[in-house]
Image 1 (cartoon, one colour):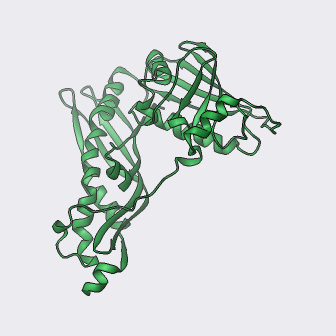
Image 2 (image 1 turned 180 degrees about the vertical axis):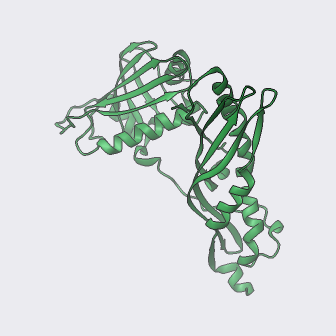
Image 3 (image 1 turned 90 degrees about the horizontal axis):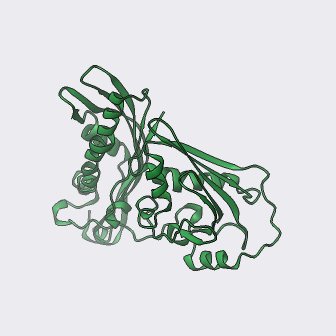
Length: 327
């Protein structure tokens, strides 16, 4: 490559097939011990969605990747009891590295719950899944080392600071200014809005006690652990709240700790002054707690968007802490 071309042209290389093979070789087969002779291990890469590219712009290597990765896992206890399930990293991306964040994961177990299978599941959540994070953190440099030469960079080590384009990413349909959302919550005007006749429902069985889940949902110091954004919240009737950095706002209507929380609830995409009613229902089982979110009064035509938001920001947010799901 000529000096002029190397420093002024934009060139990219698609690296998705290589990335899938690299991730598979680096992670599949990884295992941790459980008890005296038991273990849990990564059996296979069951899904790899997304794209991976390496670019060269004005002499700088630019990594561009955003992938969702799912693994199948299995385990065996000392007494021979077996269990299996999945581990999903919903976002393995250059933005995680740029922002210095940790990779979040979701886990599921498909075996019948028992003391033995739960011990295996704990090992997956607390040891096996976290052990994959260093591989994802080193992925960017390995990508550069493997492909920089194809973009005219013969010495990848001389470009340790691989840059990424600076972008502003909206958080799905919830992204909007905190100020406008907060003002809408305070005005509470009530224009005529056509609302859906059907409730929007999402639910999940989470491996956590009802008291701990309630605290995660209502304690302002713990809410940012799963929303990854500032929170204003007080579990008292007639108090305003703001979650996800102000992109969800409303007012607490009633509290029945630790079983139910009723809220007036809106996102910036709702018509100005319009609020739906969100019921947060918790039901404790033998080894998990069911979280059910029911929103009534969504604007007509927004049902699918609301369902996706509740699933993505509440359910997946909580699962990202390793609470997982027992099927």
